[in-house]
Image 1 (cartoon, rainbow, N blue to C red):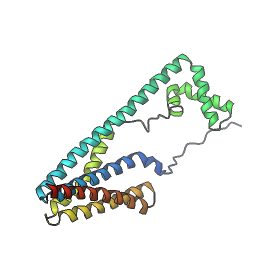
Image 2: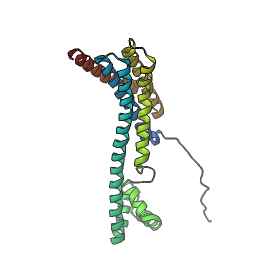
Image 3: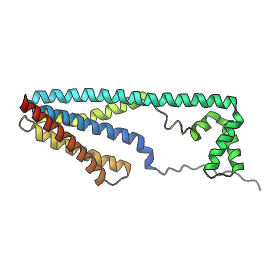
Image 4: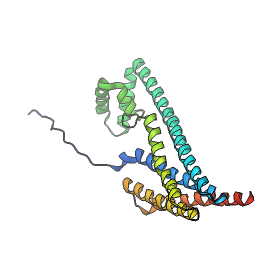
Amino acid sequence: MRSTLRPRREHKEGHLIGRAGWLRAAVLGANDGIISTASLILGVASASPSWHQALIAGIAGLVAGAMSMAAGEYVSVSSQSDMEGADLARERRELQAAPDLEREELARIYVDRGVEIGLARQVARQLMAKDALGAHARDELGISEANSPHPIQAAMASAGSFSIGAAGPLALVIIASTAWLLPSVAVGSLAFLAFLGMVGAKAGGAAILGPTIRVTFWGALAMGLTTAIGALIGHAV
């Protein structure tokens, strides 16, 4: 009796781990934007209670922070891309010099994962016949198209998420009066951080309370320290 393959059905399970990369970058950028910009504004305002100086500090913090995030992410992801490119070039040379040894190496990887040796060699042979470099990149080096680095995309995403986060404290400066500048920025920024923690936890499928407490605590600590330092410098000067 001749066996036939059943038609492939689409089966999407929606695993949350697929969100890990972009979720981490987005939350980290927005978190940095809120904390660094709010801390800078509070430090300047506590040293010299001037609405205009606080506004200038907030704008400068947003622009400088966004550029710093973009540059740092671009350099980091570019370095990763360069390393992956070097690994792929070396693997390509090894495949040309000793294809049999590379096929056996790939089979051993499958054996270590629980596949019987004969079947592992058969799988390695078939995969390498179709795309030898792709098979080794994926199963030996852990490199795939899905997680390949994109420096420009990463830089723009980091700068954008930082700017979105920094816009919150800056908006609070714009709408607050000089007398209420410090409490408005401090309380409002902590509320933004708490909301960010809840959104990040919800998107990642985690419990809400823990991430919210963590991000709010560290934000409050950073803002408290910069406010105290600004006040001390303001009194000393």
